[in-house]
Length: 88
Image (cartoon, rainbow, N blue to C red):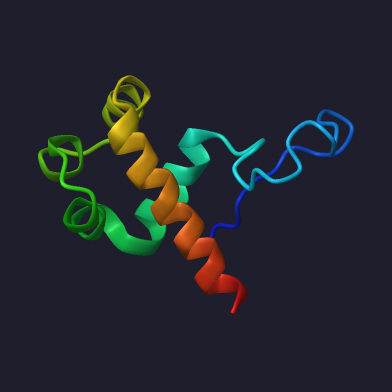
């Protein structure tokens, strides 16, 4: 499975955002992990947006998610839920 890629401590100060689990994780990485885990169909069933349903691609999804805060929030929450599940 694809593990999340975090920035190393040399490029990010631990004090910048110590309570933000998404700090340093790129949206592209989040999307890659979710697609690998759920697949495009599974992702589309959890977040109801056309860019996951009709001819999905990482590029088109990233463009949409960057412009649509509510959809990005749902995708980020899905990623956090997945990380929480993996820790158990």
